[in-house]
Image (cartoon, rainbow, N blue to C red; front, side, top):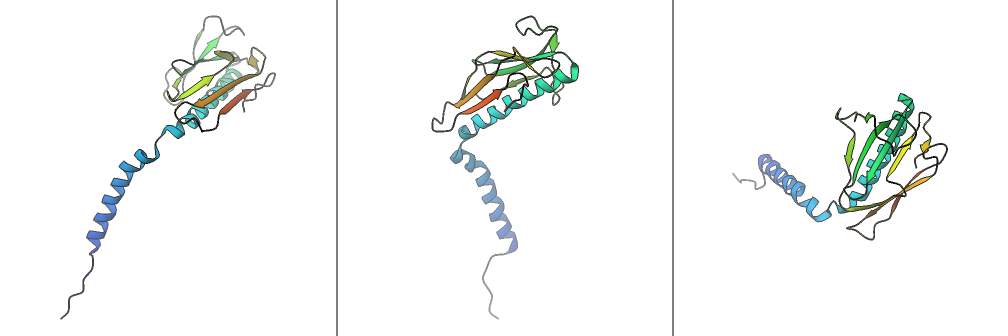
Length: 159
């Protein structure tokens, strides 16, 4: 009787599992996450702006968003008046964590903004009522495109 040569199903599954583990560990090292930092920070900043606007409309009060371009921290707070430079009356709750709304952007990006604080009134209009532009640039991958967020005057539309 002649014995056939080949691999058993157990050997094939073991090779597939080991290859998968190696790929999961090694692939991120080859690809790198630096290219994704600007996109992630862009999305976080857009969602914070939209959440601030929606919260201001829902609560019929002024919600201010502060962007610290040095520490890359975004926070949302309530104000009694339409002036975001005055003291806050409380912090906006993050729906995901039920804690004070605070998001940290990637350290690999550079953020430029005309103002460090922008707010939205109870009708969703920006405070102050002027267009604001936030620019996010990847500091590690210089060839990556610059991402721009614009808050329109009067409507507060975030794009």
